[in-house]
Length: 258
Image (cartoon, rainbow, N blue to C red; front, side):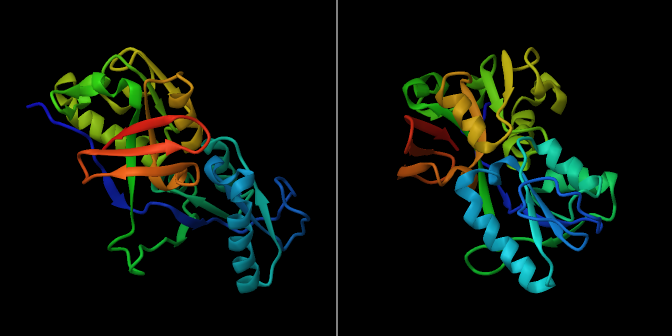
């Protein structure tokens, strides 16, 4: 049976994970180091200059709670952040569920410390949305009749965030595999061109995946709504499983399949 549209929501997987205490070697972008310093490693999504205030606020809270200096380690790749935590070169990381699972499997001292809540202050509404986006000028090619269809993404150039990203790979990959169940695909088949997509790109951040779409490198891009909200302006919204419009503040208009 052909399914229309695409929509996935899940409990907020982003968490602050606490690794084993280790002596800092001064790597990263901190202003100073000491044996008692706490190192926080950040994913590429949170490593940009525009996120510095948020990083500093979290660092200040940790400094107030522990009385110890905090150093920030910025990264350009998910695997670097995970490796840094696993190898005890940082004590704390702000990561999604998939990254935590990968890190914990390799170092069981890494445990969740806190998770974000929703507007109610509970986990009941702690959700975000994993999107598949296409350019607005190409939207009709992704429809079957009046509705969007996942069938249309076959043989397209696809951009994910990282295979360690929850909302930028794990969640959309699960939905795609469920839709194309008759193809008997494995998750690894979505990581390369051939089995389903003509080409597969990884943006290494949610913003990078969106850029792959907007500059024409990809036909379809997966990314998370909360990770790009600083860069887009909501134009129009409709109920889930229909369509959400966004317009980039810096680039062009795109349409998101939900």
